[in-house]
Length: 342
Image (cartoon, rainbow, N blue to C red; front, side, top):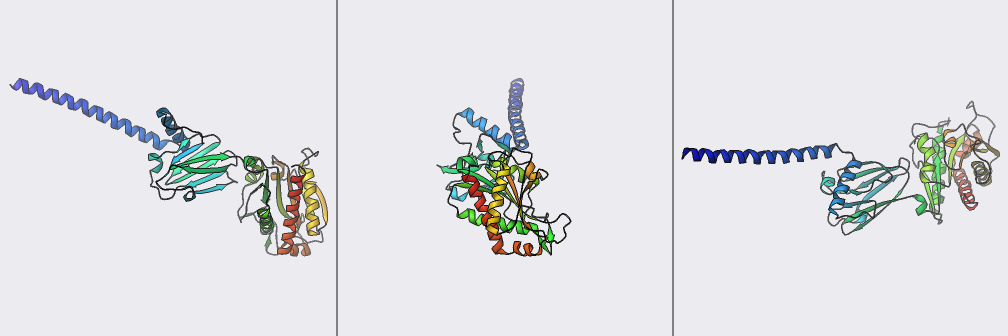
């Protein structure tokens, strides 16, 4: 009898050990899988969950990205911010918990996505160029596609307000060049906002910030722009006040000058700006030594609107009326250039 009891106890012990090993093994595998998932980058997680979904055959990827939304959420509830200068797109799903993207993973393709970060209902995507995000919600699923500007607009233009932030540019009598440049671009934006043509306008800045030279120079290429115009205010080489005045436009003299070139764009800008402002023409000048001109992938012109080192012209540059005239001239130049085929 004791031998039988001992035999039964041995079987129970062995079954318990085997069961414990299986359970522990599964727990260890789950734990390792969780650790591996936590160590994944956003792009790795996208690929991981997408491959799992494809294996089940439940999901098709006609759109680039898809995400299951909280019940009742509509497209207008989702916040999207597109920072064109850095090519960062931020998508915020309001009111979701910390682990939402684990329980409801983002699925799709990583085409043209350089980096992806997801946490607390926030998705941050860094693209390889400028794209316009297109979103729609159907049956509780958010579908997201990224479209190049040329698929949205007939023409694309980049406008750069020189300097900004901690880079004031020239300073005369307490007046900073960065503020004049931005004021003119803001007036230009007002004109372009009213234009009913299908033109996509991308600005390097519309406030007091200072994008890098690389970000400014690359924005034309990143948007596939038809042309790039940078707005600056001039000063003498020694920075001293003088009688020298007028408007000049810089271009890259080392690039081709025939046809729809940077030189021809500079000439258009010079003619239209001086006509609108009534300023003296100082001609088009070489600008290959300027980083944003030299490194622009599209036809580029840098407009020196007027001289801050000329007392009369400084007074004009700081007046709203003259800033509007400058903006009108640049606006006319943009429309003329596009009409000519840029």
